[in-house]
Length: 81
Image 1 (spheres, one colour):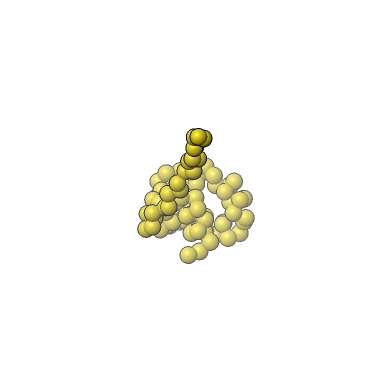
Image 2 (cartoon, rainbow, N blue to C red; image 1 turned 90 degrees about the vertical axis):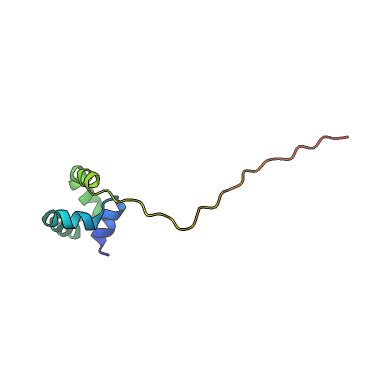
């Protein structure tokens, strides 16, 4: 996985779907991303990235192991006598 694909994943964009649907734009973004800092890329393309995220939203991966449930601490109150 390339840095650009990892970047898209961090922005919740499905890179494969984006690449297949709009290959010219994907290549243009990939080339620019390799030339500039990721923060600079985000600032330049923020409006477009938001539109692309809506079109090619990356579905969250399902976790295989359930998260452990933390038990809340309950103090024990004892009566004297």
